[in-house]
Amino acid sequence: MLEILRVSLQDRRRMPPDSTLPLAHWSLFRCQLRWAYERLLSTEPRKRMPYISSPVAAWLIRSGSITLRFESGEERFGPGTWVFPKEAEGVQEFSQEGVQILSLRFQAEWSYGTPIFDRSRTVTIAAEAVPQLTESAVNLVRFVRDHFPGQLTSLKLEGGFDDYLRLQPLFMQWIAVYRSALTAYGVRANTVESLDDKIRLALQIIETQPLSVPLRETALARAAGCSVSQLNKLFGKQTGSTPAALWNRRKLSAAQSQLLNSRESVKAIAYHLGFSAPEHFTHWFRKHSELSPLGFRRLHQSGEELPL
Image (cartoon, rainbow, N blue to C red; front, side, top):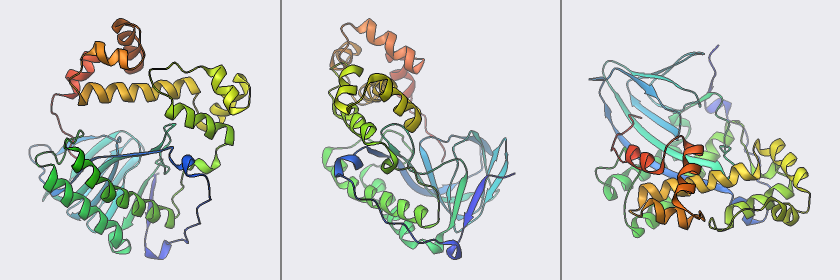
């Protein structure tokens, strides 16, 4: 049975109001644009290619069609459709005449790794029903095309600080419209509102404590007003993780970013992240990523691009 939710203008539901929380709680949201482009994709020389589910994909199909094949079945999408594919490995195929597509890839999740929307099934929305979604995406694509030439499908956009600052309002406008559209059509949202206050406080500490300072679970539990065992139990129930795992996830993300976006040595990065010796950093990095720091840097600087 296909796991796909098709929504049209008639399906639209009233958007529930946001809960009012301290703004610091919303800062637990993490988002980053990875690419944005619009172009004609030919079927040659690759008629079939892997569909990679991360980062999150959003496609506006202008002409032609795309077929995704998963173990659970086949999903086909035609022109005039916004597609938000589910999180699953599969294969993608283009129609014989090719596909004109606007493609966005982005990160949109809470700091503990949960995406803002459930991705267990594909969601499609008729483009005519959400004109603001298309308008904001076109503005974003135009900016990326003009300010990041030659990087349209690069997962590592590079530019100056001014470019970054000018990109953010356009990207956040897209995220706001994306969130409003999917919420209005009844797609289940994952929100920080449902977290226990103790968890939210602990997450804020995990997110803001300098990475060079070790995370002590006893101090974290004390700050949250509970015992270590109670804190771990709450974390497991509400985030599916532990404080230590989330701390390592944040540290790994920072390490990967520095390896890709700086020319600093592995030794310097290790010291920045609080490791007493480069070999300790290498052992830790390999444990959490299955690659050495240098291996990760070489692999991801190969310049390979993803198709959609």
